[in-house]
Image 1 (cartoon, helix red, strand yellow):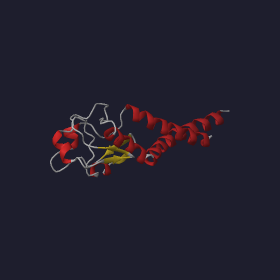
Image 2 (cartoon, rainbow, N blue to C red):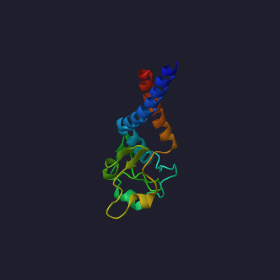
Image 3 (tube, helix red, strand yellow):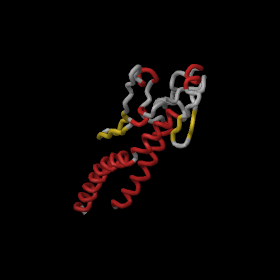
Image 4 (tube, rainbow, N blue to C red):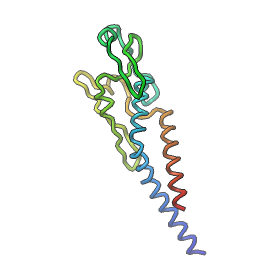
Length: 154
């Protein structure tokens, strides 16, 4: 019986070690969803990672300059209308630069935030990262995948 407990203990240690690596793999495999969650926060909801609104609104001047322009993300189209909150999509360079970097403690969303005249983080706040709602969505993705992996483990 002592050998059985020893084996069970060893198996549980392996599960914990393997689970940490599996979570990292799940995050890497979910990069598109994670980045789309972050982009959606910004484009659809004009929201920072903290859940706060992105400071500022489009001006009448911006509306006039972009009156014939539309901006689309995942099928949703917007125009820059005076008084509407910033959604930070212009050329697409910023959204296109998003990437996920993983490490043994989790992940971080990185992007090119420096523009010729402004640093987007300095100007608009904590843009990179998931708000509480999107962290919950990611937690559900991780949980679902991890349960499947653990079911196959035993």
